[in-house]
Length: 220
Image 1 (cartoon, rainbow, N blue to C red):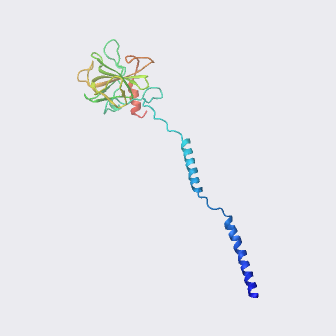
Image 2: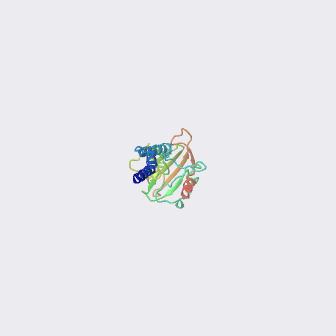
Image 3: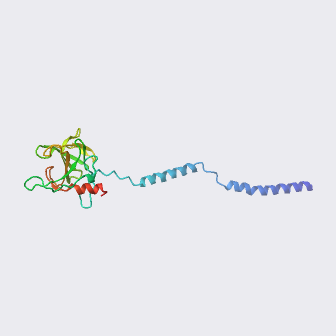
């Protein structure tokens, strides 16, 4: 009888110890099978929002001549292989009779040397003047406010035509001695004119090209 009583007490004690553990386990929530996909969805939403808020990259700027603080274009030397130290500023030198002066810079080079566009722009006029510049190119600047004049050419670059857009450094012709240049004195006469609104290729106010070439050659 005593043995049966002790066994009942032991069984009751074991039941009391196990009960709280089972209740605690039952109180814990089961893992949510949909929790991980929800976290991934939130990450995607945040990434999409960040991309939407990212500023758009600006469009590339159009190719236009750089402008000095004084408002003049900064030009590349328009004859291949010639440095600024090889050019003499002859602007304003006397030319012939009647007080005519030189309205450009002469750049000496062997016949056939490539003549290059000094700045971006448009070929406005291809013109021949037997008693003047001979074979010439008139190029309007990209901004429209300047005319660049290339004279005494030996010929034009292949496929050069009026209305063509060119970049600085594009080949537009070749050094020669046409027009009123002394025979055998091969050079490019390079002129620059400031244009008023509505001015044609034959108009404008001449300015000295040499400082514009020099400031670019020396880093502006």
